[in-house]
Image 1 (tube, helix red, strand yellow):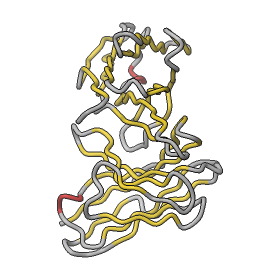
Image 2: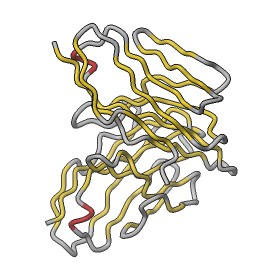
Image 3: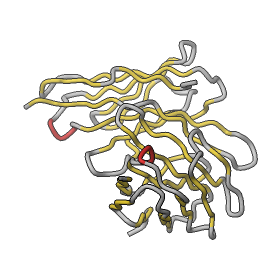
Image 4: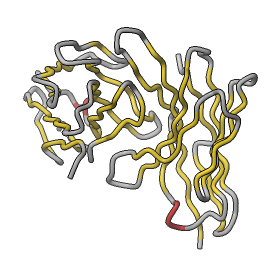
Length: 111
Length: 115
């Protein structure tokens, strides 16, 4: 099925641990995005990649890094997880900003 | 700075009623206005979208009304059903140049439709 695939779906980390969230899309979209969703805060952009080979900071980039591995894959890395990073993370892709397609999310808890 | 303001934060409607969610924006460079629907445990999914040269767009029971001069747009759900219970996000697209396109999202409205 065409779409955006995120792994893992759930993760529990201890404070200070690192992890990488994986995202892949098979719709030949140029742009990819990472959002976090917290209650009452809506969807906040962490990082985005307008095209292969480029990445830019979004609204809340602190504590995160990203890699646009190729046109299909865009990963998000937490180098030293903090409880404030407990959230639901969504990856999305789009063709020129129209009709974002979102993945099903990664529910991350940092204890 | 919140560029897209969405209201209300939550909404309760009886089955068969009309649900109305409003959004206001500030940046006149926005050129595309989608609405997303999100069910619990799922990612947001595109519901309906409009461009600023159109004042209204209807798809089934869902209608977007757009007021360019007021910089406001709204989602109307006619004959609301319990299956419409979800969180709804409005958004606005901006062309940042060089293939740099981003959506700015409202904070969401939790809609509950009672049977």
